[in-house]
Length: 103
Image (cartoon, rainbow, N blue to C red):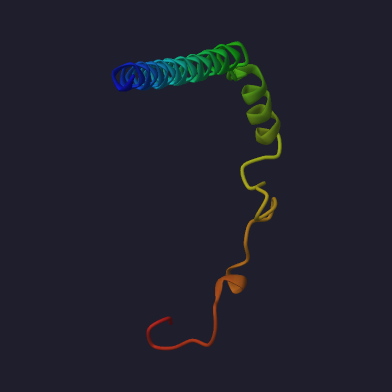
């Protein structure tokens, strides 16, 4: 009887080991499939973003740039945002008292 009991226990241990091994192999395959799906999703997201950026490119508008330059030229040579049409008075350019270095 002891031999039969040992055989039954050995068969149970082998069966359990096989089940554990099979479960582990299946878990690894499932993890690999998930990793591949994530990588594919990231690639697809990047492709979608590139396609959207390509469709929504910013393009130069040379006509509006030319019109803005022509409009600015109508103000005259001395007309800038900083100086106005009269230019800058030399008295305003003096920073302080006169010295031998700045005279």
